[in-house]
Image (tube, rainbow, N blue to C red; front, top):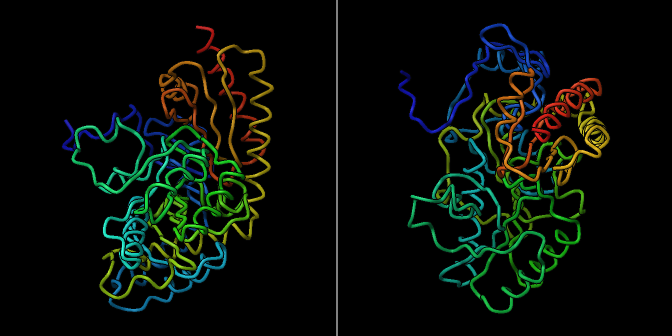
Length: 390
């Protein structure tokens, strides 16, 4: 018996090593990894440049804390600010911590406007994390159940519904921010349309609100641009990152610009491990490789080919609701719960995931080749067709 707390229904497999998009279990079976640790292993497994950079940094310094300056952290802040068009960066260790920082920032901003009970508009089917505040912002009753009382101060609207946001703007004078995932990952690969994103930016400007983009799952090149919001050409006030940022090493970031920049002062927020030497070295190296190897263009091209090939391979199959996505963030929605496809995938040497009950979620590494894309489609289309036929 394991002494691990029983918080995951773990699959009956353990892995010993990986190389690129392929990963080997402890019994020697090889799998094609189309999940990359839930959008984390940006460069695939065992990437030589990332491994070398982490090893070299581990041989120098792992951690000194934020009581001192860290050159790598400053370089990473400069790099992320330039890529995102933002002004300031706070480093933490995970997506929920980055979102927690964003929520605190929005409340802090509200109090400075003289609003005693600042509220944040959030979306149905959103997922922002599992800390008390991010859980409260999350739009999923299943993950919230049993943890009440939830944190107050969140107002929920339907995703892609600008009129609902406008209605709240008219009646609720406590609102200080809107928080949105540009692509909802856990919610089933739902994409915020360009009009919605631009409309939110406009409403936030008109009302003096902050626009917070949670890019924890869809950021770092996954959608075929550095950040999801860049498809609409908008600039948020706050952007949160984690998952793919460190290529597998835990690191999170909360970026600010405009009226959200300069709010936090010494003592307002902090993190012991946040932005330590190891994490920031991993993130800098990950970004370097993405740029050098043109992995964002690769994500766009290979992702598009996977979606087109899947549509072709599954055409005429009844039970397919929709194939959607951007770049290497892909969802195949079926008309019935399909969780068992995950274990069927293991049998077929494929790592996939099912989210929102009925959506097969694909999050391959950004290094995924065109050939690996075709292999994924070949294996997965057979699995889905057999499942639906049964």
